[in-house]
Image 1 (cartoon, rainbow, N blue to C red):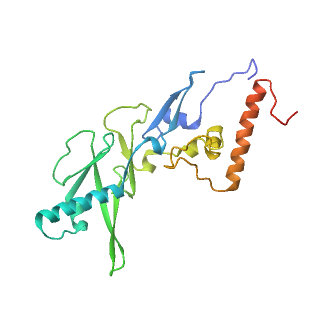
Image 2: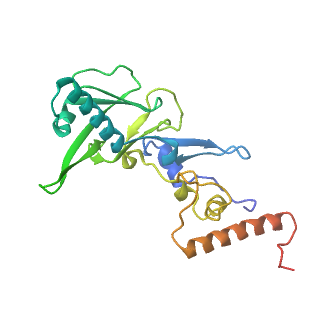
Image 3: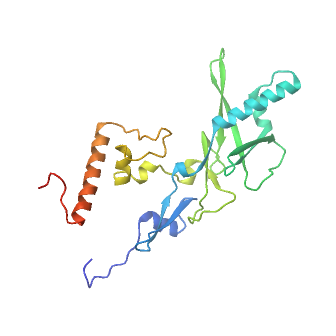
Length: 234
């Protein structure tokens, strides 16, 4: 920036919205060590605690089996689910099944509501379980708990719980798209955290070509900054 011009850094739009109190319920606060600039980013999904409806369904089936062994008669899991309460401890990574009238035992636990729907035909009926978001009350397949609050402070205790939409979560690929960090994952230079296999599942040939261009352009800028030339440029 030339001298004599009044320039005041305003920041990126997301950081400004968080500063005004208009951001999502959970964000991450960063401070750049070289310049001291403070900014906020969304919380990635893979850095949150996660509870899937499949885990709750397995707990209901196991509880139904214990009731059948105790009573000696078959129990319908669809009728049993409304009578149970599910307390999720995100940091402890455990799910406790209790009776509906029993209170929570720990303050860090979150009481999770479950919905059930019938699927399939009448000859072979099935059942599907859904989790209810404590914020928007819509049914969803997964709930998330973020260790960061709306000011970017990481705390221990009761985490911020909700669905992905309510918490404003994002993916790693969205935050690092078309940058060197993303290109190295596409080209297999580093493991991809979200996928269990550690591989970035690219969409097609053009994604790999775009990552290759980003990779070469980043190294080209680094070479020019050192006063060097890229191989093949002469």
